[in-house]
Length: 251
Length: 284
Ligand SMILES: Nc1ncnc2c1ncn2[C@@H]1O[C@H](COP(=O)(O)OP(=O)(O)O)[C@@H](O)[C@H]1O
Ligand SMILES: [Mg+2]
Image 1: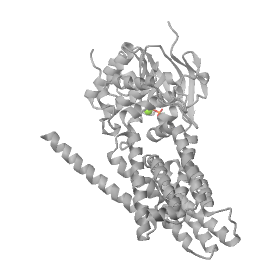
Image 2 (image 1 turned 90 degrees about the vertical axis):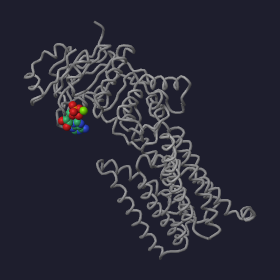
Image 3 (image 1 turned 30 degrees about the vertical axis):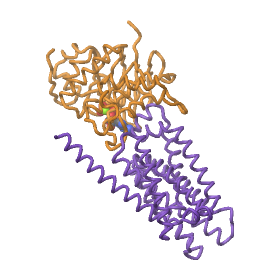
Image 4 (image 1 turned 180 degrees about the vertical axis):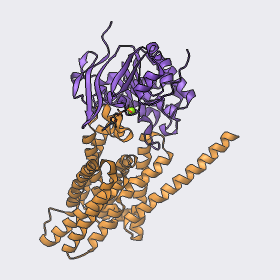
């Protein structure tokens, strides 16, 4: 087996005195499409913050590309679409191109302006998410689903190996959610981008991801989706702490 | 007009200064507006007034010519901007609280210094509403320096500022030092305000930073275009406002702001008409 792209060992984290994550052991293999599910407040966003180096664990170690996160520098290799990405100021006067270009800012330091290659990358990323016709539109004029694509393009523009998406389908209608998963599959299979997708829509997730992890302060299940589908509803409810309607889709 | 312009140095000073602030105020103003900080510009201009009053007091009481009101205003404005940043991080959930605190502090200081200086004088009037005759050659050089500083910093940190304004979380994840950039930005704002006060006056300086942007945002595509139109509208307002102010002997603050309000209204109605026209065409 190849080395995992991300590995967390015995990671615990608390905000002030409030424990948010306890003893997390999680491996994300290269090329995986891992779904992370769990109840609200279960610590999914917190786990992502740890992976992005925005918070530091009080215990345990995190490795990215086999490198301790403390020494990790290639942050441009990790793309991130935040849970809050869609709550930006809709009146903000920025074109799709301007928004996507901010994904390159880490690479283009002070003094440096965009070169031809950079511009090409920006256009490619926009094309990858199927939004080429909208390149000079103001971002505020697009629909929620289209904006979500733009935020993905912004995270793709630096050629990430790992793309982390925190509840990206909230507020997007079902039809566009299907298209959205289509896009994720393409990124995963054709562009070899490892995906970590947070969602609370367990049903859809089990259909698309090839691995799944359930987080409620600690990790309750981590394995492939077929094993997950065999969990009884009772086991799931126990983990969620309340009754749950799992809509299982048939393949 | 032209002969007067070449005869009187003060007219040249005013006109060049006007061109400079008509450029930097809307330029920085674009960032101020999209970050929803319009009112902070107002708060800072009142702190600047406190500094100006302090300078006037020093001049009058002690004849200290090296602390001109221009410089003391600038110093107060910059210190005030640092307080704004502090207050905003203390009251994370009530960031707008910084505005009344700083604004009332500025007015309070002004009242104290003015009364210590035994009341109002015509100078103060010109600081409140602007003046066509108040800019000295030295002021012009200082304002030119501020313009160059603002331009260089904006060129260097354009991307950082744009990212922080659009999506602060993403900017931080991308490794941008949000605190430092915020700080830099608010200090620049303070500098631009103190530079603009001589011409538009304390009470109307924030208008020059926000009204051209308000008009521009209605019609521009994207951020760079918003900046471009803002600067064009700002320059138009300053030029028309200065000329009419001079002819009718009105403080230019009034004429400049009314010009930008006129531009704003014209933009809104033209845009409405245009949208109506294109929609009809689309239906046909
Ligand atoms: N900045 C913060 N400060 C203090 N507590 C927080 C903070 N962010 C999240 N929490 C708490 O940590 C727990 C996990 O939150 P989060 O990771 O956002 O969960 P999820 O994303 O799964 O909904 C929650 O109990 C939440 O209240
Ligand atoms: Mg969350």
